[in-house]
Amino acid sequence: MDIEHVISQLRAEQKRLDGIIATLERLSEEHVARSPQKRGRKFMDKKSRAAVSERMKRYWREKRKRDQAACRLTVNGDHPPVADGHADKGSRAPA
Image 1 (spheres, rainbow, N blue to C red):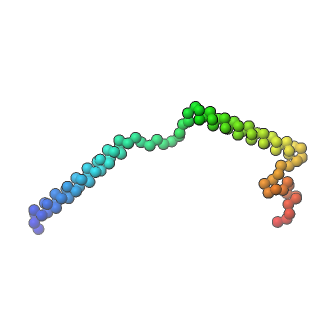
Image 2: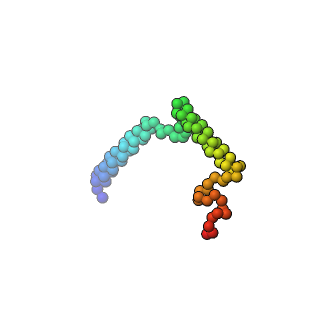
Image 3: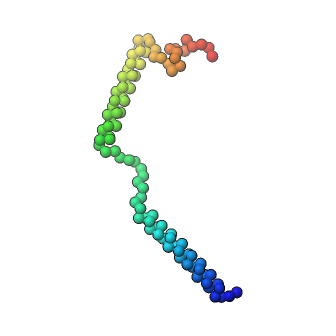
């Protein structure tokens, strides 16, 4: 085996490895330089929070009205319509 040939192969391999190492170091530096992605809870500003608050107040106000209306119907003996269109189970056709 020719020692000079082995040495030239090892030097070529060393050059290749030096290039790979330099690329990896550059990528590592770029990765560290980037600002990390923020994760977790997102916070709203005052204006957005006030808008959500108003929407939820309106939602609950309307829901209370619907629930009270349904409650009055039940108290008066009327039953609110059921999802299948029948007022009570007795009026259903047998299955």
